[in-house]
Length: 250
Ligand SMILES: Nc1ncnc2c1ncn2[C@@H]1O[C@H](COP(=O)(O)OP(=O)(O)OP(=O)(O)O)[C@@H](O)[C@H]1O
Ligand SMILES: [Mg+2]
Image 1 (cartoon, rainbow, N blue to C red):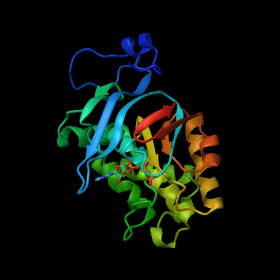
Image 2: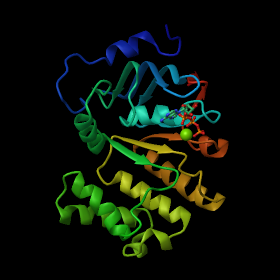
Image 3: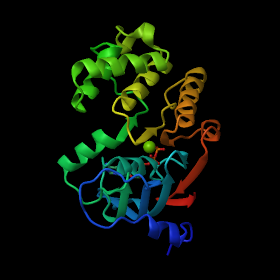
């Protein structure tokens, strides 16, 4: 059906069995989506946000997802994160079939495998930069002391060590987004997803954040980033273009 995926590689990465397992060391595809469809009910007519998407992303890739407003980019990212479900098709992430799973399973899956960066940061306003990182670490199963040590390492790595005790409101846009990226990395996700992470930033802030994604990619992090900016997309290794709920070119 699809002429974008080589038959042999999709066959070889298909896992048998349904056990709750972590990804095997031999699994090189972090994302494998086949025939994904997602339709939203709406007053006038149903909105077909995904109309048969096939996509493969390999471990260590940095992929930019582009396309006009409303073409399904955020829906695709949410499906990969297990935040939204497909109506048809299969979704495999980090070696696991995630379609058809219940909310508890998906919550656990997200804690283990997914870091998500939003356009508008979604930080906790009332608490320090440090606590914005410690909380998800503790929720992810770390002891408080270990989470704090991980948080301090990340603040250091992301150039925010002098902001440790400040609240997000006093940080610049670029600094807030770096903090949000640090938060997404606390639990060492298999996959870092970002939905227009530079969309709310000025050009300096955007470049700062893009540079950080590049460094993470150089260190081996698998990244899928939605962006409207061709400059930002140039920084990624591959551009996936969407139109009307389909992948136009990958
Ligand atoms: N929860 C929802 N309920 C109803 N319709 C939705 C929902 N989420 C998305 N849609 C619709 O699905 C289509 C795809 O939306 P999506 O948010 O994935 O687009 P996008 O490519 O991310 O757009 P943008 O670049 O503007 O962020 C749109 O027509 C949108 O209105
Ligand atoms: Mg969107």
